[in-house]
Image (tube, rainbow, N blue to C red; front, side, top):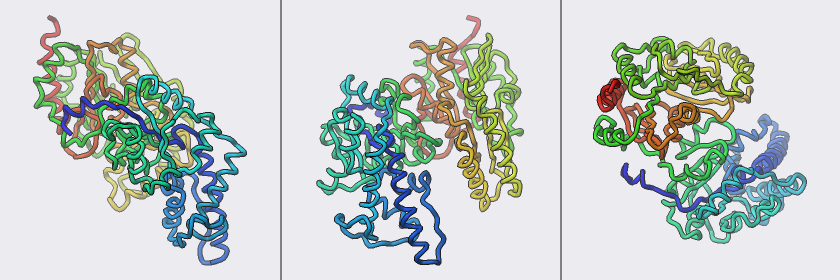
Length: 526
């Protein structure tokens, strides 16, 4: 796919998963799986006497082994993770049969009981999103591995919302492979009469994301209700959201899918393109700090801005709005850049200040300070014995640096961060270059901060071209937010998926590119 092809792509249809995307039945499924496996594993441990009882984790095990998969495949996958092999059996096996099919049928009976007793909740924002798509002529369909789809939709009062369905019953009838194979999604696209390349897949399971990518769908959207979405992006999701309301009226479905950075043009080679764009529009430039304005270094305090880079940023700020958007504390990055007239957004946009009394601190951020305090204390204790591990407390985040940690000790650092994140559920884990981080579990990131700044500064206009330069995964939120309205430039020499439009190899090239922008914009006094 060429750079130009990616910019022109549109979406004609959207195919939705059910559980966790449209309905809240994931909670019921997880409860049914847990009851099934805990009973089975407890009985097995008691009978064998040579292995401890290790219960099913309704979060981790559910997500990794059963979520989004056909029921029997989920049984097989989880048992395999515990080194347990059972005969497959027959779909007619009774629930008490110690076969894969028997356990699967027992799980279905448990789910039916929970469904009858508790009913089904829906994500109203997802329902509103689907209706908005239909009103705008976008075709919609439902794909689910569940054989209870009709009952779930009826219980939720959504029987007429998604007329085109390919569920577990249909998959069995047609002999279609379940997720992570793309068969059911491809069948839904066929029934809608659209090519996969012009359809989007919306999934809350890694297996579903893999199916969307394997089917070569035009856009794969991951819905991550909790967590940072890193696995979904790594698995091929083009966009990751915590709620479909973040897609507004569906405009994001026309966003460009992620491409390998190696396939993107270098911004320095496209000076004519930038000159043509900036002849019609005024730029607003957003810059990450570490890895973008300064090279990545072993310790955060060593990342000092060069005088040459400071001079070019100063020159740019004299000609157009410039904001520094960093994971560092706002006061820290403001001290390091040491330039007046810029906007500074620290802690991934949780803390913003700028000229003219501009000020924003996320309204819920302060409520997370006690959780961050507890996490900091626990992390310092957990990594104290790991050479090279550095815990950096920021006002609204905690960064655990492992750049100086021996390769065979990195897993210990990651395990410590995961354990704290699991214990203190108000925080979510994110990652950057050689950094594990814990941040407040709220819908806020660099992308949302950039969009807020565009509005607050009066720059959300047709004659403004936002440019964002950044170098790691936290900047991908900003690249995605600007899809269709601005340009993203990734600073990297590595090959990995990105939502950016251009690349620059390193901070030296960043300085040259910013210098070219200064030259294009000309004399600020004229």
